Image (tube, rainbow, N blue to C red; front, top):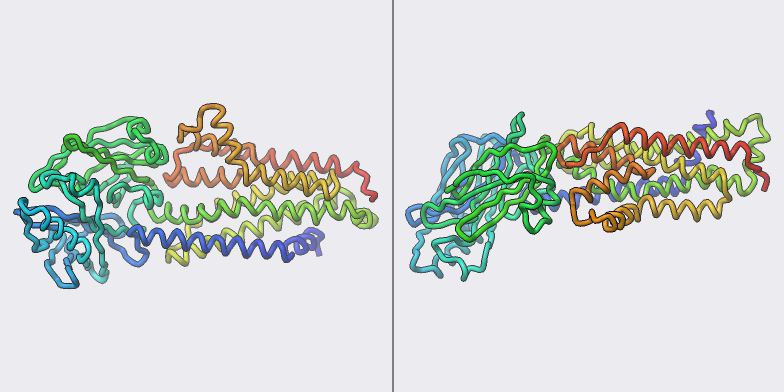
Length: 508
């Protein structure tokens, strides 16, 4: 049996290694399920193939519902049957044409009786639902309400609490970041080959009759758009969308793959509102799959280096301290052979862990979503985690050959805390000192670029590159710098460790 395989079995089939492997997979599955549950609460469904966006409007002093239906490709659907139920009683039904449909609620409104008006609105919001049928697909969409201001402050001629119906499939173009970001209902059902998005959103300003609004839009970094109080400061350029006068507004907006955030600014007299959403120019299902993989990955990256710290201890630091290496070297084996054997045994363990953890995480995500695995994402993250574990092991292994086990553990734990738990805190402190803390774009770039100088940074850097290719990140990571960083962190400690090991006195 090869010495590497023998030491690999000793390192991988340890109770501590296997226990951490199981914990990592369970954490990944639990995180994926929690995100999945959040998606369902936000109006996403894994079991349906249709997207719907609709809202209450007025026509001839009657409340009506206008909306659109889309298929899993994001194309408007014709001949879909849409039914309105109130208290489970069928009120009206219609067939969609190019996705558009209109239904009558049967509720008359009186501008002179505001109390009755809001009573009808509240009842409709609580008791109504849409049932959409297309071919063999049947979907139910419940209503929601939005309060833009206190009811008493809204004159009837300006607007009232919005009732909307929204259900989004995972197969439309919609970034996972939009789960928590939309200030009002918005849907990006598709993006064409020229990165032009078809955007549908609900006009928040509403009156009995025509109600024109001025609309503008801008693109930028999503985090900056979402956190900047003055939204225009986070925009590269404000562009005009024109004058709009529909309840459900459909516009085409050219997106930029360099950015991942869209803001639509609506103006009506002295009233304003802003829609903010993340977007991706990649297929929506891929971005969601990548998001589900990325979230628990942070936990795994923070704790996986503990395994490599422990392996360097049991394979080199401890046997060296108790004199076990002297007995091994009494056999026909050189110090180089011993050094290489125990190094590559742990590297092989890191590779096995990376494959097992990420495949377990990826397959659980696939099982929950019910879709084909995104192999590009899985293989990229496996490679990143493997390179990160190899780099940090090189650092630990170099220390283990040079110092006694007690001191090794102390220094190893300190390095672990610096490179994982406290790394972003250190970068944020640096950003504060250099005045970059409150510029979210620069802070995001600073955190990403800092991983060039971190032995476990390979997984973060490759993940950023993957997110960039999927349109989820605006940070440009240089692949050549990534390769150089990984090579330095692996090769330099490895060589320094061996130069020390071949001369050190192994006597206890």
